[in-house]
Length: 196
Image (cartoon, rainbow, N blue to C red; front, side):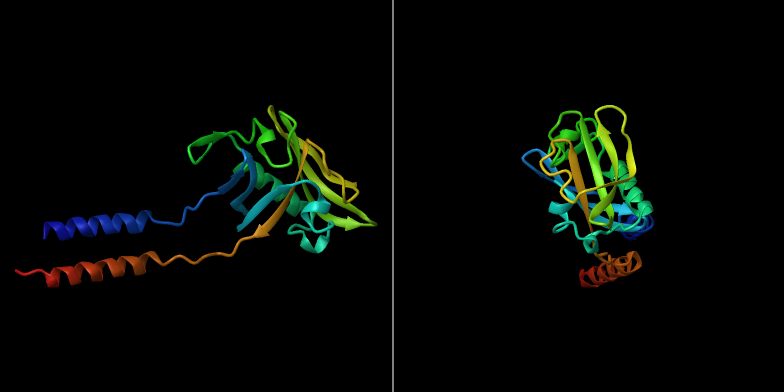
């Protein structure tokens, strides 16, 4: 009986404290941050990849491939990336990374201590409009809410990274109550099998 009460207490504690708390996962290659999965932007999870220019990241800079098509959306995405991805003290496979104070650890950023992080959101008259922030070894700051230029702007620049976002499909998790019920069923079944 005592064992049953302890099992119930543990199951109850697990039920009331459980929840999906999946964080951001990082993809690192040759010491560079290529992408991050699980970035939450306005209630939706995204994978963000870092690359060279609008032309290289969006198949020639096609606006149909932009996930954010307004200035507000692009700024929300920038805020989320700065809060969840471009942070210091990230431990990945036993190695500690400082993506905020060492922006050169981000793909397409090779200049020590300084990198512009760009999100294109609109195309007009053969030009692309982007929002961008500066990720520096010191304080970060807004570069522009609405900079307009050519599709290839950023190609082969050592201080720029364009970001491409991909919505992630929500994976439903089993309900905690259903798991608790299965646990109780297993407990009851195991009690019936034991000889008295």
